[in-house]
Image (cartoon, rainbow, N blue to C red; front, side, top):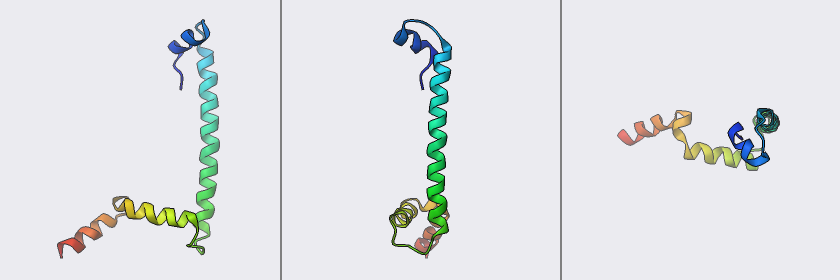
Length: 82
């Protein structure tokens, strides 16, 4: 995201509206990207039947790498304590 003070150096004049236009483009692209990713996630979770898919392997790997996010770290600590 550009700051207004940097626009003067780039374009030779100071106009804060250029920063607003740039920010709006960034927000629109971010919203479209979030929508696409949420649709992929929705259909991925809706279709749990196919556990051999690339998304399920990523999902399993993420859970394995981050057990504390899923409450699995406490279970591992209990097992280690025994």
